[in-house]
Image (cartoon, rainbow, N blue to C red; front, side):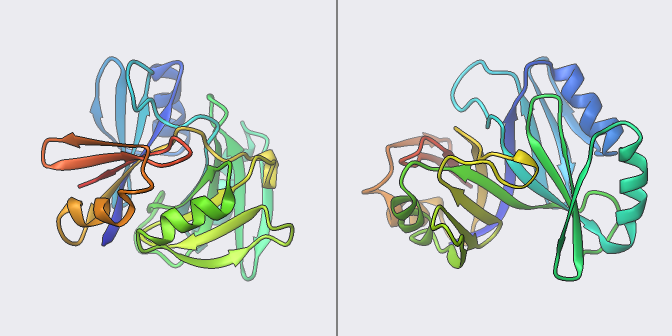
Length: 226
């Protein structure tokens, strides 16, 4: 149904300041640049930095994760720790470092089994939801699979074309929060209409964007199927 993450969009106050963080601090390549929007390459996906002008605005205080090669972790720690206040966590045999971008998004760089160098893709996005059961049902209808639950039953991790963490309002690692009104784009195996049909009775809004379809989930996150 959904075959890959095409983009994650973040709302920013200053395009220049946000661009500098991602292009210079994280060495991400700028693919397209305009007055109110910048697109940067993140592996097979795109990170969009967007000044708010219309809906969808892009996510606020979004916690999300970039994959980096395991053997680059120390390089990134040494480089970023000169300028940023970093936090570190161990997950099994892998490590993650956490820092904040200029707009308060919690950015994770995690050791992953990836090819290439530098930022190799977005593999996790955290969404804040009001009703965990409702959100889980919505996203599993799109083909995501529940893989973990928090001990306090206030978060759920889903596997799919990107890992989604669904959080009731809370602070996580490094005081990260789930994003609000997050804008995600997905590639589809078939026509976008197949994905829309799976959640049509639960979506708050459905909008045609040329041959693509944008839906709004019950928590006001925006998903575009391409």
